Image 1: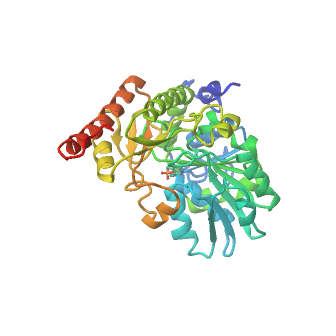
Image 2: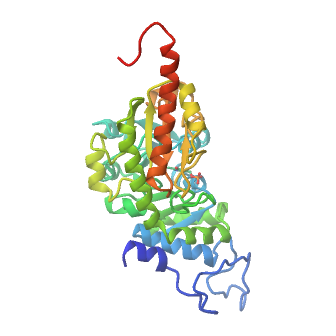
Image 3: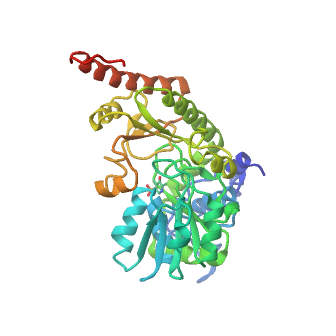
Length: 398
Ligand SMILES: *Cc1c(COP(=O)(O)O)cnc(C)c1O
């Protein structure tokens, strides 16, 4: 079955009792049993729910594995993996560029429990091998990363991780299973913030954990029930609905991102554009090898002041200023003040996360409107600056 067909058909037969084409929302907490302990696979909705089970089945199919567990948020999903695998004294290796919430849960929660976090420049030669030891339980990467869209060679990281006897977790939120299949590259566990592209409409918060090996999956599945951070049947139904257009949406997101990256690249007040589809991007060759599309996100450094960035991101017509990404409606974000504000400024500088970085999540709007909105905003910043400079004794335009 091809990808787009799976999003519509996998795990979603018409409902047997009525023929309802679309899976209903099983809004129930419990299930009638024929005799004590005799039931049809469902005994309590924290443990299992038919709407959730359908969604878990589709997600597993999309990532090409057998096992998926859904959680109330991406971070609840991450928490389950970390709780399942980290004990006091255990080590986890993460790259410099990591989702702010992942950084926070590790440094503010799991460090307190005695876990050791080794944050390294994972793409730099020799660094990963030097950081791995017999105490390493997990290596955790995203690719493309948030917010700079760096690309890591997943297969190479998997080989090094396995040689050290650790497990590789890949956060596949940015690429989605359409553009990247981490299990075929050696990942042991994949996590998703379903909130983003999988849900795709900015109308829910949800997370998922997937695994190929049942023994690797089991401790996470246990924690889904034992700690109970499950999504509601309604939210699962929304995701089932959103997923049906995943391929269509991702293609438009990716086309929009590419058009925007090219337009930004030639603008005079843009210092640097981060988009793996640009040949100048340092990860372009690896991205071409391990992805089938470059994703829908674009970041750039504005060649200007933080005040100019604030003014630019606050006054776009189509890019709403907000956290999150991956919805049909475009979003813009200022990571230093928003998604990555929980990382102290000196740490941000060390991570190469500039205060003038802007992150864009183009939606499914028409590319002409999105590009025009951005160029207009950048032109306005440039004009305002040149207007100020024109009043000064030194001529501009040189
Ligand atoms: C948003 C996000 C998360 C966290 O997911 P929530 O659903 O917000 O809890 C994790 N990883 C990445 C890459 C994200 O973008």
